[in-house]
Amino acid sequence: MLSDSEFLRYSRQLLLEEIGEEGQRRLKRSTALIVGLGGLGSPVSLYLAAAGVGSLILADDDTLHQTNLQRQILFDSADVKKPKAELAAKRLKGLNPSISCRIETQRITQDSLPTLLHDVDLVIDCCDNMATRHVVNAACVSRSLPLISGSAVGFSGQLFVLTPPFAEGCYACLYPDKEEPSRNCRTAGVLGPMVGAIGSLQALEAVKMLAGMPSALSGQLRLFNGKQHAWTSLKLRRDPLCSVCGGQHANHAE
Image 1 (cartoon, rainbow, N blue to C red):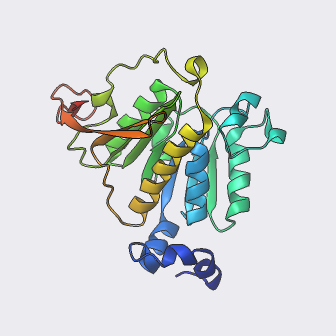
Image 2: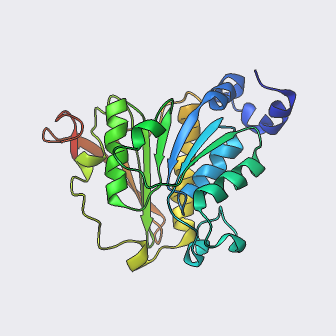
Image 3: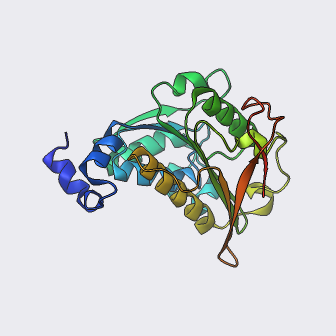
């Protein structure tokens, strides 16, 4: 049941017939794992906490650096050199004291991830390295968990949603190469609103799905050109050679 305080806090959300009281109760019962609390993870975590997602697992092994402040809106200047996961938990609990925050300050590995995924309903990939993305993808496929992945560099961003039974494939189908790309935020830079835009859309899909709505993005790759403000949508195709989803699903987009 929702308390009087919760009815007031979420009143604008409850007015949406697609959410309503039942959707809000679903959000309250939900657990989401957010992998990475940087430029993408900042808006994702803030919006999920504000929306009333009952339990958030905040995974980030990094400390805040001054160069992060240009785009990582979860943090303040006084937070530099402090662990991001701890800072995030404090900020989110201040935003919404009714939610639960659990932190993970060690880098996610194939061995550590299964423990974090216990009772998780959905995973949001906001990390900045290819190795972690592949580990998260493999674990989601193995446990039949929805995965919302986003990334951004320069003026470009991408977003896609993978849902069980992964009929359109998985992250490893689309990006089988585990090598780090040469063009990333450290080498090419990124505009703060770009990661904000992609992270906000990740949060939108997460709240919809946790409230019981389907994602219109499932099995699609959305590419955003921030200079032209243009979207390109690509549909994933099957790849019989995928090493993660059992050779049943997708190798590229068209």
